[in-house]
Length: 278
Image (tube, rainbow, N blue to C red; front, side):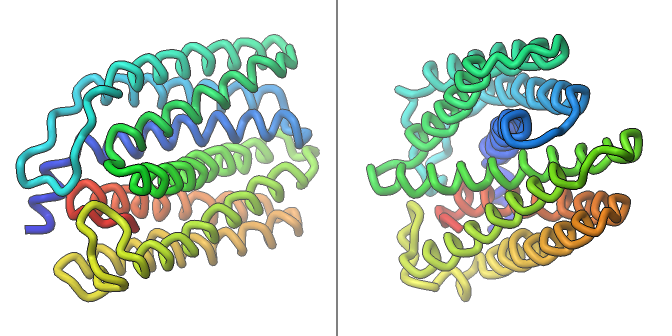
């Protein structure tokens, strides 16, 4: 039954992964441009990756089905059009940011607008599927941290590769990205404890009941594979980046790309399939 419920809501899981990847990656680019000495080529390439992920999210958004009667969440279709327009604006701004970076233009206003569009996409997602005002707020927290983790790890992994062709690039940019990623995952661990403790989500599971119920296997996998393990690996990536062992740091971030993506899929599957906000 749990696997079947997840399969019924794959379109929503796909939206969560793609929207989080796109928005988180572009925010990481803006952060890298403002706070690091990352190269223009890296920033432009990563912004283009965010643009491609945004296009995929936009295509996914247009094909979202109505939830079935057995789905634990309710979709507010009143926000569907606005969500699509927000994704469209995000894609346009991500492309313009790519062009600006490629042409060596700072364009701080453009970066700010891109971040605002990313925030609008996540907010409209929460409004669409959060239900009550409290549910909307909690789901928004989840979407923001998911975006920070999925987009942040992609941006950090690409940056690790850049050191192979730009060996004189200082270690500070990768250290900053790895530390930011570790902070986001640590926040996700805290939210996991809080959400399971209060029984967050449409299903209204009693405090910590998700750890022992019929969905317990997926919940524990989300915690161990999608949160605790990536947190440890992120810490190791920070240490190796500080010592300029960039190949090791990149390898660790490669591992995190897979585990964080798996954790994001599990989190989205638990919300849309079981009504558990984990």
